[in-house]
Amino acid sequence: MFEWIKTFIAVYETKNFSAAAKQLYISQPTVSLQIKKLEQHFSIKLFYRNGKQSVIPTKEADFLYPKMLSIIESLTTSFAQAAEKENFKEDCIIASSNTVAIYLLPDIMESLVTAFPLINFSIQLMNSNEVVDMVQNNHAHIGLIEKPIETKNLHKEIVYEDQLVLAGDAASKFWLLREKNSGLRFFNELYLNEHSINLPIIELNNNEVLLQLLKNNIGQSIVSRLSISDEIPWQPIDQSFASRKIFIVQTDHHANTSFSEVYNRIVEKIRERQT
Image (cartoon, rainbow, N blue to C red; front, side, top):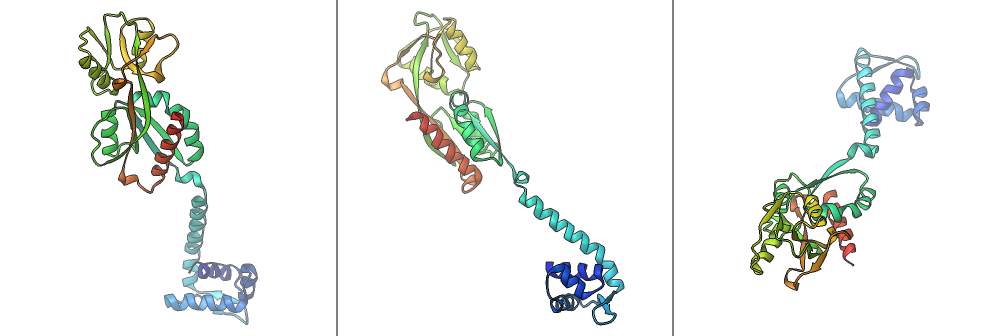
């Protein structure tokens, strides 16, 4: 049908089957046959013969010509847009808990944006429970969590073993805790209960503030070894608390999509950090 329309336009513009054939780089009989098929298909007369090769458009042809031009123009534009990959960019939201977002993701983002030029990445920082909620409710495509929580209906796997240490002034009379549902708070509370430690608590909802307090010898807390700078004193803790697992989660809804490829790339690159 597309070729028939192109032939119709060429014949209408040249008013000559032979000239139309030359313009389209096809034979004159092919032009005649395509016009005949078009007329038969729609039961409409398009041209009157005016000599051996010349034709006169009918009123029906006059009506159709601008519309056929519009169709060809629209198709040409559509195919050109389809060939322009920038028109098919996707947004990928990565919901991540604190440690992963600050200390692991920055090292792999260049690899991600290079491997997936048609994806716009957005990293949203939140605690592990919020990450799971975001992914389960399809508000995020991929989640990274630092806490062993239930992830119903999500695909989950371990991507990193994070070393935990006791940081800060060991003689401090204060213990620093992150906000409720934070991954680090979970492990701090386990440690405090296990060792029957009962110190005044300073609660913070920002890990950078917590680290600044430790740096200024205010309080102590269990934190990721990844977050410790040279200015913060730290010591190893007993083996049962010395590490935690970092998980990546995704719904099955994104299986076999570009987001599953991003998922696999994140797994690969974060695991490379461990080796």
